Length: 98
Figure 1 (cartoon, rainbow, N blue to C red):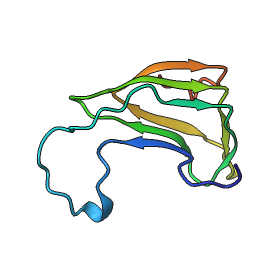
Figure 2 (figure 1 turned 60 degrees about the vertical axis):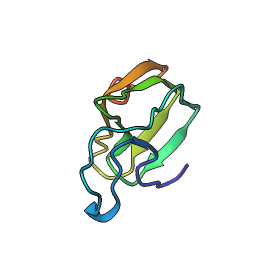
Figure 3 (figure 1 turned 180 degrees about the horizontal axis):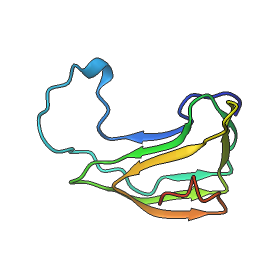
Figure 4 (figure 1 turned 90 degrees about the horizontal axis):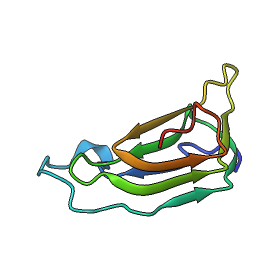
């Protein structure tokens, strides 16, 4: 992967162009998702975004041997994770969020 914006993303709260009506809790469960052996560069500082719902947290998410670097001069690569439950194996601390 080379120069990808938001390379790893799960977003149960996705709302394109902010046109969604706030109609309550999520009705979609996200379970047993595996991201494995993903390497390369990100065009955004957020290499991993797991934005899961309060009422239906993402369960069984696995991040295995993920190595993504932000390609800008400050190289501050980060993960943003909310309500994601799982495990991280073989990753830098700043990316291991489950």
